[in-house]
Length: 252
Image 1 (cartoon, rainbow, N blue to C red):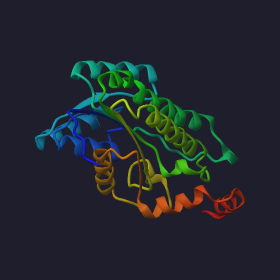
Image 2 (cartoon, rainbow, N blue to C red):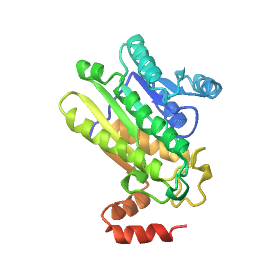
Image 3 (tube, helix red, strand yellow):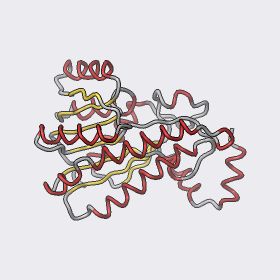
């Protein structure tokens, strides 16, 4: 599959981790990147780093959990730049949500960011992309979407929503000229995963960004990595519930 080219891109969750890495990765390849996140100071530092390398990153202070503000701001950017070519819904929130001590505030925040915020990001200018017959939307899900993992009820469910949402959009948009990609990372070093005690096949942020960036350029429909974790989760997807439940109970 031939690699695609972009003039402009919007990436959410760009103040740290994968979002920050992706913003720099695309900016260094000549894309004007609108880097969106809540922490303005982090975005300014990111823009300065890009500028020093001769690249262009525009900070966009945005909280995707506020869906109305998200819709409005992305539509403004789309109009101002002559049309966004690439939108990556990367912003995410993850915190333990064990059924034994469920906390509604955690569940709600997970839904607000990972479900409502991601959907608003992807839908904001999708009609305009369809009208222009070009564009590429990318949802960053997780391998945790493939089964309901232990103590991850809200997170696994939120990423499962994004996975199914992206699949339906991909089918609907097949002949429109708008590409759809869903990415399923495993464990990657970041602020969000720092709380995890066990992370098999952990990837450095830079390595994960390189894999994701290349998959996006290729226009992959789905991309799961690293292969070791993806293979394990593929087996778990088809595992009978009695075996899966037993495996989860034994998991530390």
